[in-house]
Length: 360
Image (cartoon, rainbow, N blue to C red; front, side):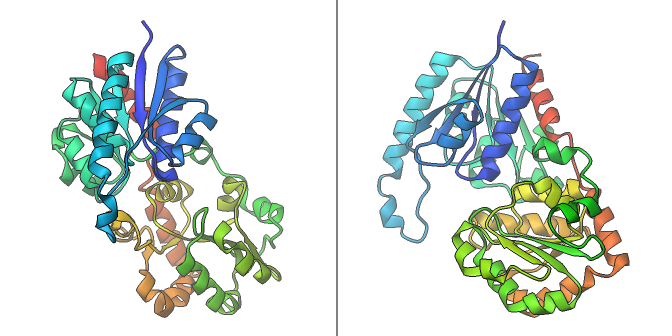
């Protein structure tokens, strides 16, 4: 008898990618399975999920505008419509399980599934759990976490430390470092700093890089700077003499392999990749994230000596000194070993194992 799964995760790539990764693993195990997504209308999952080969139903759901709450007058009405649509979908498809990886749409579909007695699995990507997942976790069969300290938010007998699903390419051995540097147009004999600000870019990181570029190069770094598409015109002119600035990096496995150290935001998915990569990392959390998730994520690594955490407000004062410290072989090796020790490369298959076991 073929299986049916409903999966919800969206709003950002950090929610969508784990959802698609889990769906792909379930499809591999159950080729005849029906796998259907629920997403928020107008959000990026409505295009990303079909592009990955899965069907999706959109529901009108949105969060409350915390800065201008009066603009959220229609949120309760949207929630009622979303709950109704999810109930109809669940009654029609009769799924074996419903899996949520976060995002607005996860709330109504998991809540309705729990009311209807359908097994649910919550995948919490962050060190500090979100309010929606905390509530849903009370009745979920399993809560799959990526950080040990996230367990405190959930019923302990149902928490499983699985890690976050990451792109399969990062679970395999990376290309050779020297060859990767050459392939990217850098000198294999010199250290390379990889700077990541996400697909749109990170304004604070970009401004700090622009201010400090001459000093960074004086420390002996070559620089691969991913500035994001919003900042491409502003910073692309700084390319040259051991520095490359571009909006996107097409092959991240080569970029990670080439890097000697990494500057990055602290999104959950990125940090899971960095643990597998095992390179020294300077983390600058975005302060504009709900519940300050990125700071909590970065702190979970920095407290174990696996990364350096620098807040945006301290960046100008500490940035260059911390980069210089990562040039020190002993410090770099200690950080590399510590961050590798936190890697959980079997996250996707471990989560799929739990889902498969729900019917037993």
